[in-house]
Length: 466
Image (cartoon, rainbow, N blue to C red):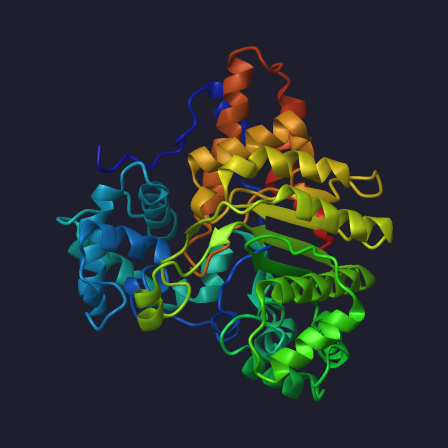
């Protein structure tokens, strides 16, 4: 049992699912169009010291599980040894059954290290030694890890102040996997955040613009968009609780920004007006540059103030928010469309209660100009698991065209997360295979197989023009 949990037909429940996966999906290259990989590690072809460095450090999914089990923070983000951190993760893994971590863990061990033994407290030390011996070799450098999973394209995510030096190095290298970036200017939008003025000063220095007025801010952001574009960027990304779409006047926005630069406290209404204005400016500019725009909506971030003070953001203290989404999102997209300035758009939803909202919203702005112009993005973060992905696929199928879907992405900081593409593909093939078996879909393997290939790879290839 311990050597066969991950097998060729894992998650594939009948012959139709098996045929779809093995013949039409399995061998398709990976286009990972949104992740948070460190481009410096790729440019320098980093070799990790041990399995903990590449697999546990920085992974807040694992950290949340370990904390829930009662593991001391010393062995999570603290000063515990790398080996002790891994042993504590090994101890945790059996308790993650029915959490996607259990599947991901064993898929990653199997695909990268050919380890099919179940990870638990008894096997942890042996697996640590086996995996670390491999990861600490040139064959397992970051570039080779990407080659190992047939990654054709990966797109990291950078702030406007980034100089993109590592992307420039990669563009001149002979690395066969194409690496690009997405522009993420949320720190320039969220005007109520601590440290906003310091950030704007840094943005101005980077752009060569003294930012005193709102017009200056727009000039600096446009400067950085142009810089990113010249360095091969063709996507933006925004991680927001919801889309901002309030009525405002130009004079109001100028006054609000001036007030902020003078370190005065803004009201919630003022912040929302400003965020609406700058977001609209950015999306008009993305359209001008022909970029694809991504909206990650619905996260409630940094809930544990005490731990946020100690460890900072992105350390495992976020959850699903229940923000109202439909009306503002519709108004925002409609305002752009009315000016013929709505670019290709991908909308990712974190609250499963809003799946049908998003699945129907995209249909309002698919105008026939581009196949799948506005996309309901794959289940992400808390929803990139079997149930979450299935619900997203079902909502999209019921209310749109799943055949036009651009498929999966990792949204991860880990170089070992790419089997999530395999996980998604197996879930997709099993969903369709089950419906063929039940007679809800015809046994037309040529057509349904083409649809699987398209969702796995071809649609993204066409959509992004990589």
